[in-house]
Amino acid sequence: MVLDEVIISRAIIERFLRKFNDSLEVDVAVVGGGPAGLVAAYYLVKSGYKVSLFERKLSIGGGMWGGGMMFNEIVVQEESKRILDEFGIRSELYRDGYYTADAVESISTFCSKTVQAGVKIFNLMSVEDVVVREERVVGLVLNWTAVETAGLHVDPLTMRTKYVIDATGHATEVVKVIERKVDAALLTPTGRVMGERSLWAEKAERSTLENTKEVFPGVFVAGMSANASFGAYRMGPIFGGMLLSGEKAAALIAERLKQGR
Image 1: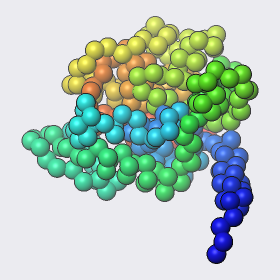
Image 2: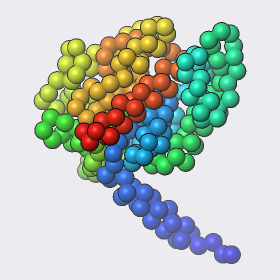
Image 3: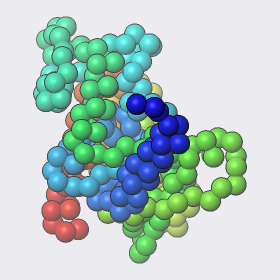
Image 4: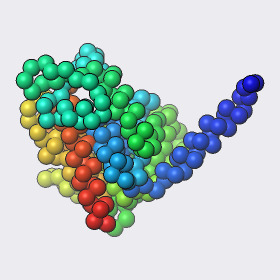
């Protein structure tokens, strides 16, 4: 067989465009490909919903790759170990209630299983704006991250979605766009992004789950985006709350979709 470079190019272009075109109208758009976003997307697509995930960076996985301070092990607590088990990720008991797992195995498995379940993932794409109709987010405005980085004046493209999950971590990228551009208050106590507080693992892990909820009509926050939006603590390199937050966001949205809302 003689390889033809043009055929290789056509294959990539045609298959990507088919995938992207099919993702312009979905049930849920997840923004941010860290553990919370991946887990949320996985559970939603397993529930039968059409899901696309957009990640601004080249790699999917957020900060989990580096574990804690580039020691590529992660810690999860007892309550969230079942999610590792469901994905087939090996973990090891450290002491009562604390489990460790290899960071690279964990996040690569989350990525792989989420794609295999049917989620369409697009890396190197950023959300630069939202589409709002009747005070509800109904779409996202997308551009290549490279366009944003280079400061090029290139118009974006738009996709439609019933719900958005902001799982962009500390940056709360989607929520900050809403705060900046939409003439309406967020569903936080102040009506604005409240910002994350200092590191306190015990409180942060609980509040991550408590703050996983709707922050603006049509938009839910998960993972560190939840704590940053609602003014709670950060948790550091323990990831159980992230996984449980993604699961909760998926369940809340699935219930809304089931009710036709």
